[in-house]
Length: 280
Image 1: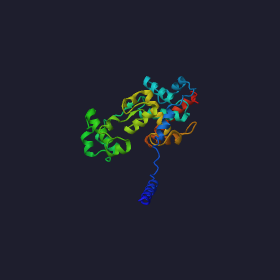
Image 2 (image 1 turned 60 degrees about the horizontal axis):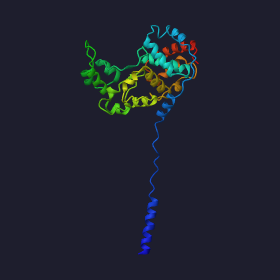
Image 3 (image 1 turned 180 degrees about the horizontal axis):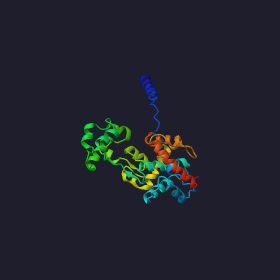
Image 4 (image 1 turned 180 degrees about the vertical axis):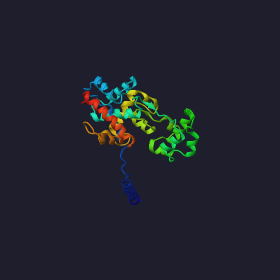
C-alpha cells in the first residue's frame, strides 16, 4: 500500500505539472484611444498668426460674408490646431467649411430626405424602397416630422450594418448618435472614441458635440490620428504647404473622394490666408 500510495502521489504530481494552460496576454488598450488622449493633452505651442490679417484675406475667399459664428468656429479650429503644419490647419478649416455648409458652426444631421434622396444617397442595401416610400418626403410635402426622421435614422444607421460599421447596438442608437459636430461623427463607437480622445462623455451627452470648441477638438484630433477612416493628415499632407492634388487626396481622411476637388479649392484659399498671416 505504501508503494502504491507513493506512486499515486507521483502520478498526480506529474499530471499537475502537465496541466499547463496556454498563456493569455492581458488585454491591451485601444492604441487609437491612447494616441488621441496624448494628442489632446499636448500643450499648445506659441502662435505666430496675425488673426486680423488672416480674416481679412478670407474676405477674398470662403468667408467673404463673415458672420460671428464663422469667426468663432474658425478660431476654435485654429486653437485646436496650435503647432500643426500649415497644410494641416488649412485642410481642417476647409473640411469644417464644407461639412457645416459654410457657417463653421457644429450642427446635427438632418434626416429630412425625399424618397429619391434616400434611395440615391444610401442605396437599397441600407433602406428598402418600401421604407423609403413610407418615410421619405413626398413632392409638395413640408419638412418631415421628427418621428419620421427618427425612424429613418434607425433604419439607415441600425440593424446589422449599423452594428458592424458604427457599433450601434440599441434600437434607438441610429437616432441618438446621428451625425453631429463639424465632421458629423456618427454612431455609438465613434461617439465613444471621440469623447475619450478629448475627455468628454459623448455617450451620455451626445449634444456636447454641438459645442464649438469641443467639436473643433474632436474633428482635429480625429484627422490627426486617422480615427475617421484610418487616413490621417500625415498620410496625405506635407509638413509645409500642400498642392491642390495633395489636398484632393486628403479628402480620404473624412469621406473617400466625395467633393474632393471642391474642398481642395477651399483648402488652398485657407492656406494662402494662413501664409499671409504668418502661420509657422
